[in-house]
Image (cartoon, rainbow, N blue to C red; front, side):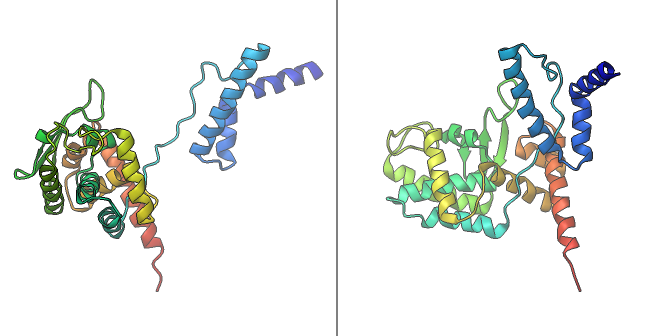
Length: 259
């Protein structure tokens, strides 16, 4: 009986699926359960290498966890971010207009970090109101798309282009590094981003600005299939996820209403 009890205990200890179910039953979130799972899996891999102990996680998939979308920033927050980019103590007017143009394409056109640094001068047609995005996110080299320039972004880009021309920059990249006279590096982009974020006093990520762009499209009544193309999503379910988060936020605000 004692041997059977030990065997049963050992079998239960090595039943990862039961352990996952137990964690969910005791109220642990899917994200926390997945985090615990990964921590234990790393520990058992270590024991397997060091002591040749059987690894119960081998061949077992990690429990699914929904991807958490960053919260969209409000219109007031976006205005403050743009104001921080404008009023930061940049050394020159070129640096000021460049920073504002970078945040303009993040907020008003939903560009990703890599799309900003890869943007070419010929990709931007302010008069036609278009931004050509080549090699966006996705398989097989990324998905090309066209982003459109609204009136706010048009003014921002016009100011940057005037300063770019005045400085005599002729490199093929749209955003120019003062140090090299060539395209802005990812490292330089991140430094500008952090400077403006600190000045704004708002804790936001690059992706949250993209989320803001997609949410603004959906809130403005843009059909979801059109928003999908403007955002450069390969799967419409990704775009629908932004709509779901917006619905959840609306529902939460309604719950707060009191007479």
